[in-house]
Length: 294
Image 1 (tube, rainbow, N blue to C red):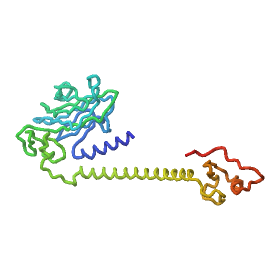
Image 2: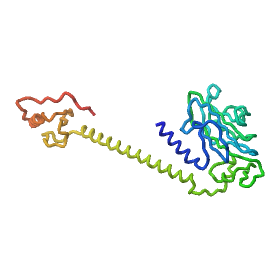
Image 3: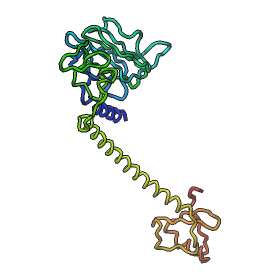
Image 4: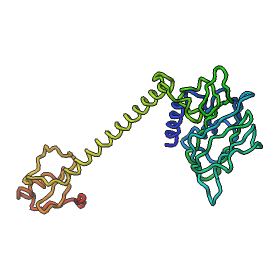
């Protein structure tokens, strides 16, 4: 089950981040040169792992800075007022730089946007050995101060980002000015990957319906058999030797609603009793075991 959930989560990640470079903290702890933008996720799985202690640094070229936005955030909640799983954001290329968040980020803290004063920003992610949660993802964007040069887009907030980030489905500016008045192409990679995901989900749902149909079929057969066992036989004068019942045993109820299960070997004896013609003057003896009462 965990493998299936992890696979679905990976499909979703691939679907919605195909247009932008993506990294996962459970695959890589280290650094990355930020060319335009980078999406960093806490894990490839639905939930992050225990005992994580990962530091990740992004750097941009000289004259620019790093702009970071947490798009989702859900870690383990505080225990006795202390964060067990937490994230810290640092200005610089290591955890020795100035911490940009006033306190450790945990729980469902709505993290602010963060801007570095240098060309680097560092994320430190720590988890303990107890509970986990769905984690976080953070969007890093290379930004420069105005005036914006050639090949740049001027955000309403006053920062400049690469023009290729305009209308890319991501809020790189932080105020969505780069996504305003956009006409999205249905043939983009994102749309194409959504089609792949839909096909996969359709196949999966088809398999679920097939399994449900098989289960329903056998349950129906079981119900019909139970119904047959609970239904008294209308004519008790005589059993037909060529009956449609199982050939190894025959089932009937008498007038007092008692249940008997007789073998084929005793059919003639039973017929004789029902027709008031007992063999050798002996009364038939029902089998010891009774069927389950209604």
